[in-house]
Image 1 (cartoon, rainbow, N blue to C red):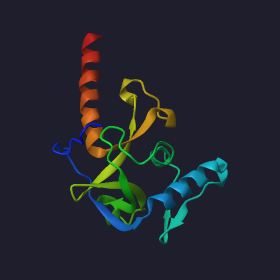
Image 2: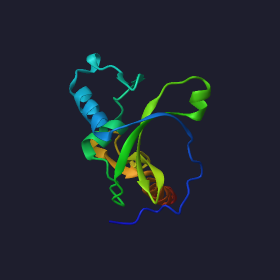
Image 3: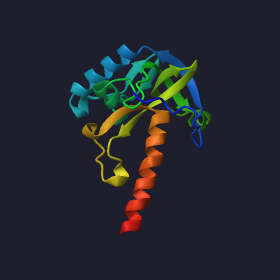
Image 4: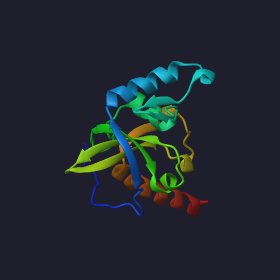
Length: 154
């Protein structure tokens, strides 16, 4: 496995208002159970007294593809019920984020499009994988270079 490119800091790091931490297995089971329901029957799930939407492609990716970074092998350790700080100021809703720990610091996990949408990739489960944010940002930088090269050739 490659090393997680943690030295590279993203241009902006999202700040979150954290409600609570939840066990990975509990959430993954909820996501899998919810995905079995007919679309009209799906509803938000109450977790730690908070209603959470668990239907997103991002969460389904974690449930179906696993909670280990495809690039560096970092393993997620927990979900957190959070909302971004801008939403918190407006009393906005919460969502689930997947986190791991590397060198004593939390690392956010994302779902990555194997073939970037900007390069023609589909926005579906078959074209997604689990990655830590650092590996995903590194891959995104490489894809941006490739996209620019493709534009120049046209």
